[in-house]
Length: 281
Image 1: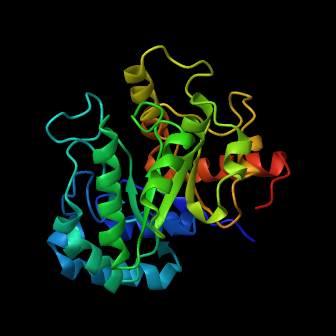
Image 2: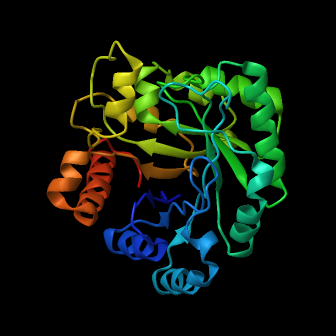
Image 3: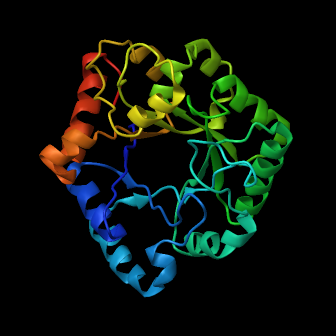
């Protein structure tokens, strides 16, 4: 099965991202229909712009995967370096309906930032229930500097809610820093995994402060193979049907090369890592 590669482009308009993704060699684009706190994106504020998006999709064959973030936190006690307020999924039904009507694939990304385990499970279950009505999944990413920071904790949440559209997003940075074993991935049902993020690490050693790790993880990641860390051991056990997303934010390289060139080099570096390690593309 050929791998499908999803690009993340922070352009002003979604149709620009689609054209850039096509030229760079990606198969899909993250739609970002909504912001982390459930804020309405450009298309929801001006739906007439969809004609530009549809033309770009028709001309390129790119597909849209992922609606954006719906994070989980306690709004009365927000995580000190989390991702903002936790929206009510009922308030985003208009966005879910728009995405369903326009052929969006994938689902909503989420992560847990509250230490209140019961609240986290309750909110995750609610997101799953609401998005299921529109045919979308909910992809829980365990984050090394978050509260749900290991595959074991993410698995516990999925087992607790027992929702058919619940998924786990794997990110090599979080897997490395939290010492996730390949055997832990193999022990999970293959259908649990909807997407995984590939990158190399800003640090080979785990920073002593998670706040520092969050800063570096959001701005200074490296291309696969740059540190010599054995990333292939995880890649080989991730199911073939999982969408591959190079998540390699690097502020200095983006400023030096420009966003489009950086996106091109990012995909080239990821595929080269696959080739060097005899991993099917």
